[in-house]
Image (tube, rainbow, N blue to C red; front, top):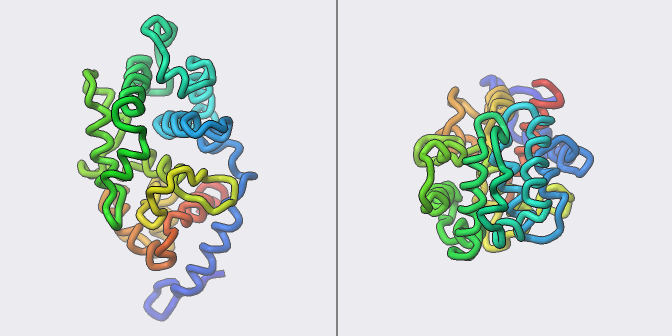
Length: 263
């Protein structure tokens, strides 16, 4: 159990010990099953993992079973070879993509994402190069903003932009922060991939959502009521006090406590 000090705050040492235990419990392959991270785990090629992970993270809101179903549908459209499809597709290969892909993510959005990813890989050196090039010494949030600018360079319907959040506009950018955790963290536990060595885990931000936010508030890690960019910054500061080198590992604890233990 975790106790509180005389001021009502949870003892920091006990809190860290408690959260470290929950990280150890949830940060393992047995919890991958219904998580969107299971989608990129289908692949071995670096670029396939990146693209499958990016697309799965893009639609990661709502019912998790539906998310996985929609992600599998996208990959099926791509012949289950996402990188090859992105780089080598022709206009005729896109004609079968129709209707709703996932909730408000439609065929038009999916097609633009395919074209934009081709541009990113062929003209900008890939996703890692962009994020690494715009990171600061303590944050990837500026890199998310600039990646978004690059990603929407090509002609597109402005409504498609809603599917890639911008922390500079106040968004918590939960889904892209989750994708970055997958690509950057490398702890040999078999969940995150650790593919991007040009970015240190210390600059990652917690993928703040309803579950992790509610748990963080109950534990005294977060005071801001809105789950926005300011809340991410506040939570990051607290998590970095507990582990400056790998603060976002606590996402496992916060999410697990909220989803599986119903905090």
